[in-house]
Image (cartoon, rainbow, N blue to C red; front, top):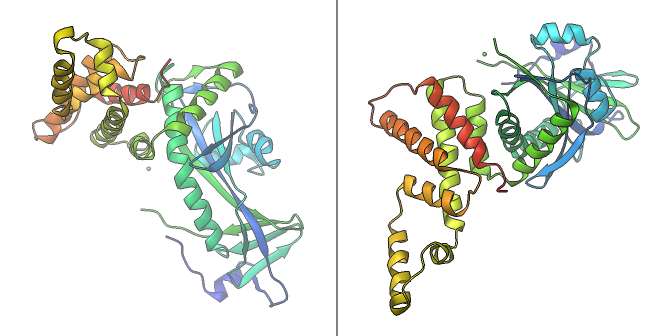
Length: 348
């Protein structure tokens, strides 16, 4: 929730009222910074990567220095002192930084500013630009973070991308930087695996491929699970991601063709056999049956052990739904995350 400040407070902070002859307009950007837990990257910044999700472009880079990463992405530092920034945000490298923007050009909607060359400071003067970038982030970040979690966590121990900092700034047509601030209120030990620059680059590429193809509903629950500390909610969110993916995949299967490739009907009753199996398939509303059929027909990278694990996880989910289990076992929380991630991998 943003806090409105009075004119007296703004002027005490060094802002002055602008005259009608001092218009400000700029195109805005946002930087989303995540601490990566469970991974060690030695390079200050790996090369930037460019992608798009739901038609929205983005850039990202990973490295051990948040300033080096931001120089890679936007040719500027995030913090005057990276050491002090780390203390303030209680974080350690490596970091992921996602860059969104630029927006359309937006005009200043406030009353007060500091016109200090080459920087213009304003207070909550560009709400429409914030709204545009917020919608942009809602389209990109859930799928992207789910893809990153899928790509990195399947190789090693769990890897978490923890929101750490965010920057919002604009660039005017004459190349001045607009820093638009506002005060907000909000009601919060792991091991690491070292990866080479080549391994990190490979997994980033895989993550971006996963993110670009991830269904938005799946991404939404996957994203909620990633940022949930409560084991019950985390388990249920990941299971919902699996359930949605299963039903969506099941609906895309050419069932008649798959039946004919698995079952050879007798020559004397080929049509009857096909009709019989088609009728059986219409009765497959059970989630476990649909999951198994997807393993057979659409997910060649899953195995018997994955089908068995899903059945175990579904039993736990049902026990929670029926009230006989209050909290899922810790191993089940990790297992459901791993299975949800595995479903997002492209078939070989």
